[in-house]
Length: 158
Ligand code: FES
Image 1 (cartoon, rainbow, N blue to C red):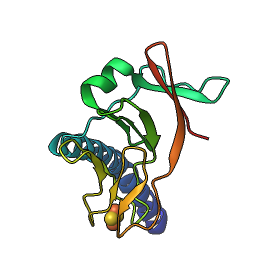
Image 2 (tube, rainbow, N blue to C red):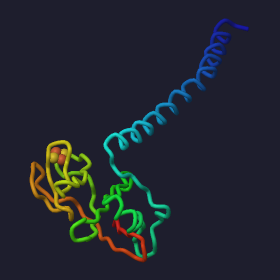
Image 3 (cartoon, rainbow, N blue to C red):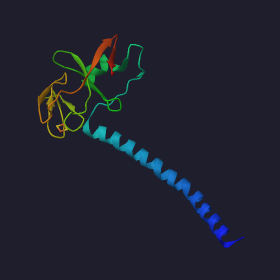
Image 4 (cartoon, rainbow, N blue to C red):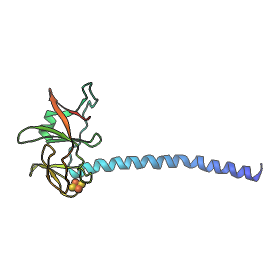
């Protein structure tokens, strides 16, 4: 075998044998990111929940949890869908907002003591329906149409 051909085959062999290591390293990174998110949510005490049946119905609404769950937790956050459902403990009104702060995109959280949505990054505040109370944000949170049906909380995202 010529020297050049031999070296070519050795190169292919080295690349093929290192491929599983590269794949394992990449999949480990994804698991780490998922673990970080989970740990992050636990550390901040956010209520994370994905509805058991989150398929979009013919009328465009999809379930994000139950009234019972909302009464218990006050908020249901689905970061992936970009929805925060909230039941105002004072008047029992249900609202659904995009939890991304319009200032720079941080995720707002319900402050149970002060009774407003608070942005942890720069302190913007929003009422339970997403209305701007205090900046630096200059806009309300985006809101979604929401309704309850039987015990389900239904939100229309588009
Ligand atoms: Fe919310 Fe800056 S990102 S106040």
